[in-house]
Image 1 (cartoon, rainbow, N blue to C red):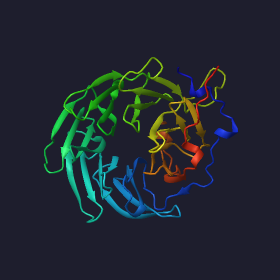
Image 2 (cartoon, one colour):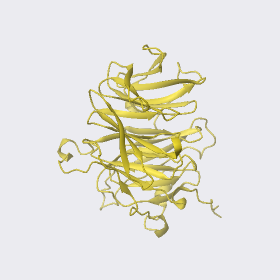
Image 3 (cartoon, rainbow, N blue to C red):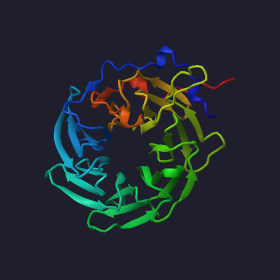
Image 4 (tube, rainbow, N blue to C red):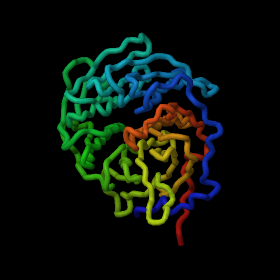
Length: 357
């Protein structure tokens, strides 16, 4: 099943996307961008975008109707910020990073407070609710996942992973944790103190990102070798789990350059998804039809983070250095910006499946 999407003709005109309408966000971060988050509950239909950066800040922008962004607030950390998420009501933002702590900013008051602590940098933070109680889950390089009830400075629970946490995502009761050495832990948040299932990634190389399906029935995995895997929590049939190649240059003789898949985002309405990588391209895919919907030209630098807004009509992507070429690749003129791509109706909509004879 490995080459399914890759079998699509890359030059097919109807699969080539257009970047002409994309808008650059003003006043971007001053260093590499690590994560993006949109408010899930737009107040007065306003979109707010949180941008986490290695410059030790999270910036929150209000996205105006003309596509431009206006700075509204920021969170300051004592080290690079690796992860950011909104509360369900869209009124608070939580972020975490190399300073080993997570902070919550109340957008109404402008006040920020520390809410979590680890022994090593926190790689990921996600908001969730347990029986209506606002909670956060943090995953750290100290190999632990911790749960936080904001009414207490002590963790409400903790679970130890096999290795350092590299990536994590939450959808409803599904928590998926990707660690070093390619371990993937699946946790049912109804029973958060134990692993529901543990597997090794079906991909051969280091995991970069896990992202839960919109319906929380499974998750996608992206790795450094230009591959993506689709994995269901409950095995449906032999064809339900599969992997495919993406973010690879055309072969030159016997050599094919492969690029890391840095982020995967699911469309909130259609359940289709995006991949974005070190090669500076992003693509939209339909996992059910096993089909690439759209591919886009290179954007002029690695794409480090992506996110759809609540309605799915804006796709934000961050262009900045991702260290895939080591220290030497980080030149002073490397771009550092956030782009907003207006999503047209046909770009992310699933195609009617065509049955082969």
